[in-house]
Image (cartoon, rainbow, N blue to C red):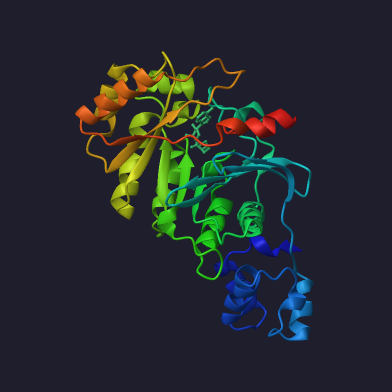
Length: 344
Ligand code: SAH
């Protein structure tokens, strides 16, 4: 038995063809599942009774359960969800003026071991299944529907717990379902996957033939510092990473985002802004400067406003565009993995 929410349209077409059905059957089912929000095959009145029985024998409908809800004064909604096997994951809705972005988790825990991040406090237990990522959208849309203002999730950022490129196939099927016009119809340009820098997967991502966005967690402008902060840099150092990013930009024509957490006294000196400018010079990119959410166990501190401004000014002088990430849900443990870590 398979969870129906885990099947991409492409895979459902193959499954239908294998049963001697026409391929439009997959589109019809997608429309029932996602547009009409059917929660059983019995609701699918234009599917024959006998074929409904066939489908029931192969697929079931199941979404994660809401374990805990936190709503912030700024509209941020953060959920702790319980999966079928009892593991818990976080998902968060961030409300921008241009839309509602859902921050999706891709794994239970994380093995990347970045020294500043709370997600790695709990080692990776397993990858998330496609349906468990799709479930994050379904549940958030259902909550928004209850609020009755006609809002839905309009943007996806795969920036929750986990390393999406360590769960590549499932994340890509999730992206396909998020993007499919009969499912969530979220445009590829409104979907961003963030990676700590697993180089071979960046090439694969560039080659999938979708206009999906890429964000790179950079956080340091030289190998010595980056290897200290992010273990992944020992396997994939900066020259290899930058080469892969250039390939992505060349292949997709999309601008790439470099994420850079400013850590006080660690990577926020103006000299690093110069080094960063040199590193990414000539790449169609912009830098997203991230105010650090301090985590007790980690010992890093957020850079003060003066350091942030100085860093940003220096980037600007060197012709690099940057923004300082807007902060959400400061009152509700917004930082990655904090809610989940607390529950354990
Ligand atoms: N593994 C992926 C996606 C999850 S992390 C990646 O590394 O990109 C999403 C982003 O949040 C990354 O840029 C990560 O470095 C950053 N992040 C992690 N801990 C943080 C914290 N305490 N404060 C601010 N940003 C954090």
